[in-house]
Image 1 (cartoon, one colour):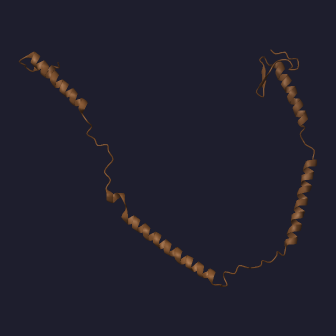
Image 2 (cartoon, helix red, strand yellow; image 1 turned 90 degrees about the vertical axis):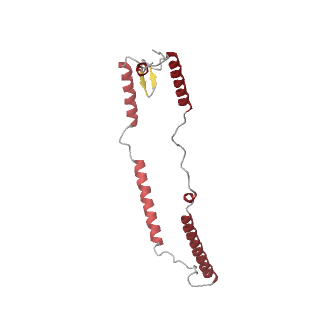
Image 3 (cartoon, one colour; image 1 turned 120 degrees about the horizontal axis):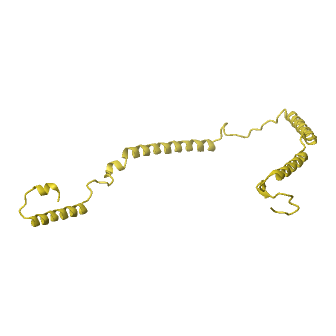
Length: 170
């Protein structure tokens, strides 16, 4: 028992202990059966807020105006198509270009120049000797094999000391 209850004078210790036990059980039962007091449900939606009647009315008026304009435009177009006028005759003959031959000669000249440049590029000797580079790389790899303590890894493949032709794995 806690100090506050011990300080109060009681008539019968057992009756008081039974009363305290009953109060504690009632308290535990109430705690167990307790329900939350906060409402977590979504708020009530009012019907006049769900449907915006003014907006719907404005949209209907706008659609009606668009339909009316489309109908008037269609009527005007059909009238123009039915009645021959100066504007709807699109049978114009376009004149031929006066500088067609000059453009053709210019294109042929440019093509000839491009072919001459291509020929010069293909006939030019390369400045760098790729065969000498390959020989130098092979010689460099041989030097690397001679000085390495562990097997040499070149381009992701492992090579062994000594030549690969001999087939002597380390």
